[in-house]
Image (cartoon, rainbow, N blue to C red; front, side):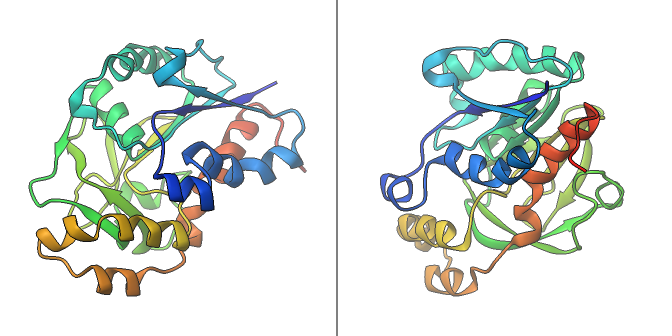
Length: 249
């Protein structure tokens, strides 16, 4: 039976956890309908910060990597230990989807580079464009282009790994979504974030945004639903099921 392994790489703000759930809770909420429709799909959470490197999944399984308030460039030991694990998982053709921190970690593990964006933070509901490769992608290709997505990040992928396909971009970041192989993706945006979660993040980052010349009130007013992007985690779960020939009827 296939399983989805959620690799937890950080905690959200205390008020976000209280009111909406932590990163892994938001992931679980997104994929629970797929899991409930397919009892053969197992789902588990592994905190890489406290539990070490997870056991290697099988080729029928899927890996989801959460966001974090940590920075990939800080090279914390638990984070660095995940890099060879991710390389081996890709060699075994395990399906993977990294989000925000997971996006930057995967890109770095596979030979790219991540670090602080020279133009500062990107926060709020932003519009992203699918590239030609993105429009034909089995995971992202159903999205309209441009499409709205929730973003909050100070670091970005600064150089994509050799051979990676760019699936989405915008004027701030040329690597908003990447594909590293037939079943390995990562995205800078947060498909698990609702509009209320995005507003809570903007409230926390008001001072930092003002310091870089942005208007937090305008960003708050522009927050909107991102249902299309929000379906990405469920589509990934469906992809894992379909690959294992256990998709629900």
